[in-house]
Image (cartoon, rainbow, N blue to C red; front, side):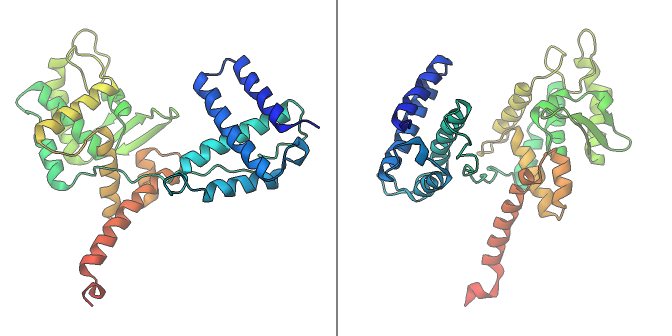
Length: 307
């Protein structure tokens, strides 16, 4: 029966023949050497002894393994090692060394999503909105960009792609083509921001257009469509002018929009629709932000804290 040692060597040669990157092969070698050490401790040397139970044992061993510093192995490290083993087992099945894939039932650990950083408070938002010089065309454009980003929570790429024909200012709606999955969605715009956009379109935008007008709402200095990087640069420039110390990006407005709506009682399903998330799981991270708020309020005002 085939020895696992030899099959690991075959697999690494196979990756080399396929032209896989050197770092990929090195990672596979490291992962499989780790896996093989575990197998030897379990007295598993032949392929016939490699089964799902053994793989589950390895997954549990990784979950409780301690590093040299005495800390637990991170979920990322566990996932990388298990991913190498899953690919190795898949190779063994494809090459007919195995009738079935014993790693098929192994689910990789998922990293917990981090809470959004740098949520802006009301005072910071006011500073940011006041940063652009409204006496200039460029300042008007920058202010409109900031207002729409916060009002709608759209992404930088979506902001750059907005056309005047996508706006229904009388009803207060913006139709956008999502940069993820290319699916249309409609988001509301507040009456105040609609009025700002209307004035920009009537008084500022015509002066900025150069050459053939392709209808994009936000224009660069050459009078053509903005790139997502240019939208990002507008936000960074305004943040610097406002004196805010937080790392403010286009996504900061997206996170702040969602968090503020949730704090004010908006149903999470509506926020999911607004942000264009495919899955509710992506939106639920904002509930953790408000739970942290609740914890702080509880600690400050609950009578039990004074006992």
